[in-house]
Amino acid sequence: MKNAGRVLPAFAVLLLLGLAAVGGYFWLQREFQAPGPATTLTRVEVVPGATVRGVLSRLEGTGALRSWRAVVWYLRLRGAHPRMQAGVYEIPPHASPEQIIALFEEGKVVLDEITVIEGATFAEFLEALDQHPHVTHTLKGRSPAQIMSALGHPGEKAEGEFFPDTYRFAANTTDVAILGLAYEGMQRTLAAAWAARAADLPFDTPYQGLILASMVEKEAALKSERAMIAGVFVNRLRKGMRLQSDPTVIYGLGDKYDGSIHSRDLTADTSYNTYTREGLPPTPIALPGRESVIAAMHPAATDALYFVASGLGDGAHHFSSTLEEHNAAVQTYLARLRHPPHPTPAAASHGAAQP
Image 1: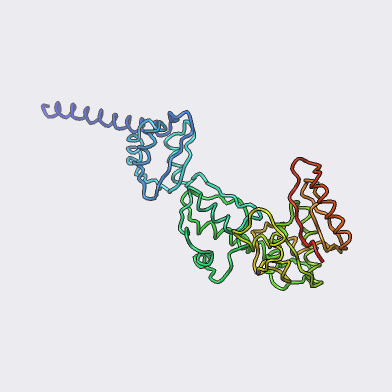
Image 2 (image 1 turned 90 degrees about the horizontal axis):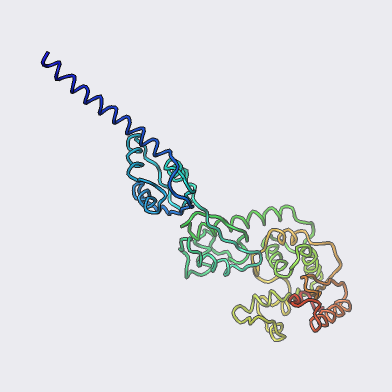
């Protein structure tokens, strides 16, 4: 009976401990599922190799968690080992620890973005990448040829080969990865347009179509005129006329371009001067968008051989089939520059301005 008397208190103690353990578990579970204390959105970066404990401790410091220790204990009791996928996360106000852990496990990172506008050059694309704070930079200081080799395309010229678009990516994505997406995007766009091209185009390869598309991109301020501008260039190619496009001259000038194109620039021979040389320039002069690529492969059926800015400030051009008509349009444009109908007239575009 004496032993029985000792067993009962021991059993009671074990029972109390068991009840306390169960109660503690359910308290931890409740804390794990309860809304968090944060009243505003919280950003946190999970670096590669970060631990659950370290990240949760930082979140407690920002006020997004009540107790990182309680969360860690609950995860241990459940035998859970959450995957902490690297990236930047946004924690919503009042997010529970359960919701926060789910964000990390699912890798729902905040995506950064970079926008490459249609008509930008490859150099401008690189500059945007170099300046982006959340891109991992591996290509700084490399030449375009070295960059193309790093992308797995040695020997290819870089200009024109990357699709202008808005690219969304997780923090710390490499510049190589983003350029790879842009390169693949342009190749798909070009291949689709080439496969559906019009018959009897005066060029033989998709690359030549890309060159023409880049010229259309730089000449056309209005989407509605892209096919017409392509039609003018195609007509001139068929007749053996020089293309005489100012944007090609500007591209050939490089750093020597001072913001204005001068008569001396039109006569100074470079491989990109379409006033002094026949045919297409040797490479694209920009990154053309999809509409310009399609326009180059499907030029408008027109007898126009010339175009010049209207001078009305709306980006439109006047298209002419004879030199006489074109010269008159040029005079009209110059008159409108002297007496502009709008406070800021559109810049001139003298594409195909001479016979």
